[in-house]
Amino acid sequence: MRVTNIRFVDRLLDYRKVMYVCHKNADPDAVGSAYALSESFGGDICLSDGSNRVASNVIKQLEIETIADPDTDDYDLIVSVDTSTQNQIPNIKLDTYAVIDHHVTSTLLDKAEFYIHETTTSNVELIFRLLYETGIPISKKVAVAMITGIITDTGHFKHADENTFKTLSDIIRTTNVDYTEALELLAKTPQDISQRISMLAAAQRNKFERIGDTLISRTYINSYGGAAASMLTNIGADISLVGHKKENDLVRVNVRAKKEVVQKGLNLGKVMEKIGEKYDGTGGGHAGAAGVDSRTCTVNELMDECINEIYEVVGGIEGKNIQNMKKYPKPNTKRKNVKYNNNNINKTKSTTGKKVENPVENTKVNNEFNTNVNAELNTKVNNELNTNVNSELNTKVNNELNTNVNSELNTKVNNELNTNVNAELNTKVNNELNTNVNSESNTKLNNEFNT
Ligand SMILES: [Mn+2]
Image 1 (tube, helix red, strand yellow):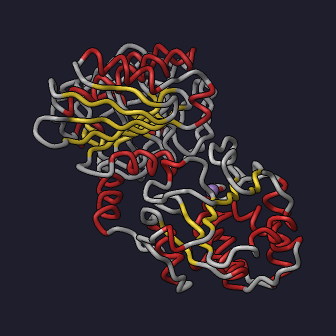
Image 2 (spheres, helix red, strand yellow):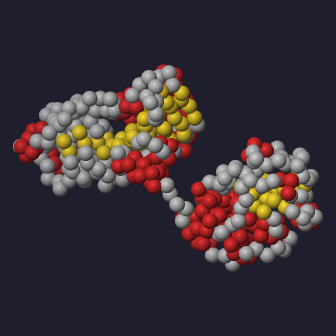
Image 3 (cartoon, protein in one colour):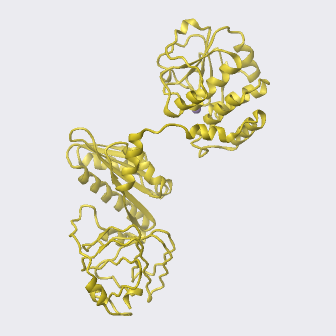
């Protein structure tokens, strides 16, 4: 039966030997809940089936005692915390038990002796209310544990609501805990060295391109593909793809998209499903996080297919930029190895106001950092920074960073920073990052280095 906070404490104190049980792969919300209860009312904390990396760190740093394989018969009452189904606590026989749970649906309630169930952003919020309303003192250590539960369950407050902050504020006020202690504790969570290496390698190999205002990143890595894809969207990509070879001939591409792109109509799950069918593999997932694998193609082929499909969808979303999008180099486009030719560039003359047929001859480069992508030229660009200003058109380029890839050209761009201006588009570019695509025919470079 559902009970009030005061009634819950009354009932709990009726039992002599109590065990607080956390769900499998316990998180800080479960551990914080069990720890707060055990510190307040006595009893053991049970990890029904391990704890995650963050919770393990909380347990270690706060020196929380836990038990792993208890004999449930030794206990008069089991209190399940932060758990909504029996299969989340696979090794625990629930006989006489109580529940404190914050999940929307909870199948454990019916048979519970008594329970507290309310939909909150974290379970520790229910625990805090219980202790606060019944006047039970809360130690700073317990407060820190509870705060780690709030932080992690709300995804660092991304899913927090008004009550989350109110409860957090009450925890800080009543316990006088230093909030940063919880942050510092979480920061001490050890990261797996192989994962860190994978993330850095993924960032190092990353290539990105732009369609309209959408930035698409792709990289290759052998493990942690999902984490790498998330990392790339966190650092700026709207859509990220990570290709990796799995065991034997299995290859996989993990994809992530930001909420903004999903809201515009991109559904990665559907795109990956379609590709999975085409390559006799498995594809699918959510609109913003999906993946596909196959044994019938190489990782490059699978990546190319994913990129091409995503280009189609994003090109449609970006509307007016679809023409540029189609001229975009597809990753499977064979590009000639291009040589940077100083002589040609120095000889170029001004053709202001005229269509540049042969940019080789018309380009004068005055900039310190400059990348020019010419249709028929084999320019290899190694510069870091480049600014291009189009005089005829109302193009104002304020960006620092820009990538330009010319689809039909044999340009290999190695720079990090590059600005390009498309002559026929009255593009006003204020973004930090910009990729512009010029086709052979419509490239007019009337820039500074085009005197
Ligand atoms: Mn929870």
